[in-house]
Length: 115
Length: 111
Image 1: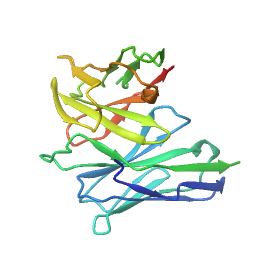
Image 2 (image 1 turned 90 degrees about the vertical axis):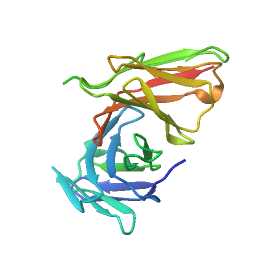
Image 3 (image 1 turned 90 degrees about the horizontal axis):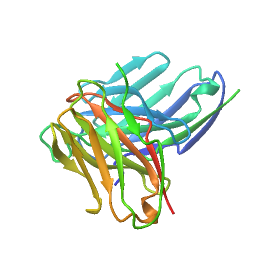
Image 4 (image 1 turned 135 degrees about the vertical axis):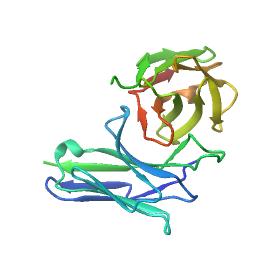
């Protein structure tokens, strides 16, 4: 079953614009990870944010986490055509729980960046 | 470090056959997880192995099984294939409480 809901399901923007994707989840987590997938290929890890962190940056990526609202957002600044892909959030459970070692994925956001 | 590798990359089987997929984790990673991705169900967790022990299992029938070897390499097996087993099978490896890094996947088509 999918834990996360991602919003929007699809996003179409022009090169140079910023893209924001949101993810909500249901249960308590240890960490939340964002992945990119190009055309049915493997998942590329983008960033991991732990439950005690509120914001994290990596290059043009900015991730926020609000555990009180059980939500996260991924911001891609100054987007490029090469950013066109599907983006997924995935939550990791706490150690000792029955779901430890398992990532639960959202359904993903399809991002299209037009040149 | 070399990334996660999966073999084969593509596979075509017929209903009723069985298939074995292989995954080699990043050196030093002892946890290997498997996921199934389909257009209808998205990414779903199959199972996770750590130090040759299955630590967690998703909600899949017993036709789906796996194992992990002492060198952390893992295999998954699907017996009595059904059309609905057609999917991209992804393997990931990780260190404890760390990122999961995915391989390129095996695209299985069941005819």
